[in-house]
Image 1 (cartoon, rainbow, N blue to C red):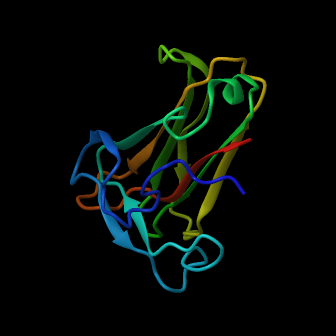
Image 2: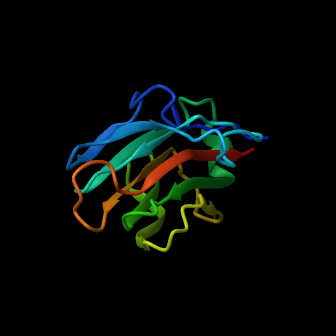
Length: 175
């Protein structure tokens, strides 16, 4: 099984390892996962998630694949790169979620990308965690970095942390 190349994917270390590219409203915060949540246990247990506020909150990590131990030859063979993210809204306030992932060459020029923008999680009472997943294939030789940025906000401009919640983010490379 490939290892997750993102550091602190669920907020167990606060906001450590994340670059806050947008930190609006009351800013990012980390909250405790409810023990009855299906994400609390399982194969990749987590007890925390990141919560967004009423203005846009985005955070990013850029993974240096060579520094993570992959050789240029391995990367030039175009291995499968899979990204995953889990998000949830709240029952009392709608929220907007976005995910932007870029495969970058050694000059940090974009080779390929995947985006899930403006996904509205309406006030439906459905607060189940939803998974977004994408696998990059056939993107060409030269991959050296993966930029992973996600976040969102609430859709009603409520003071506090009523926006989208994210956790268990991952970037894996199948060698």
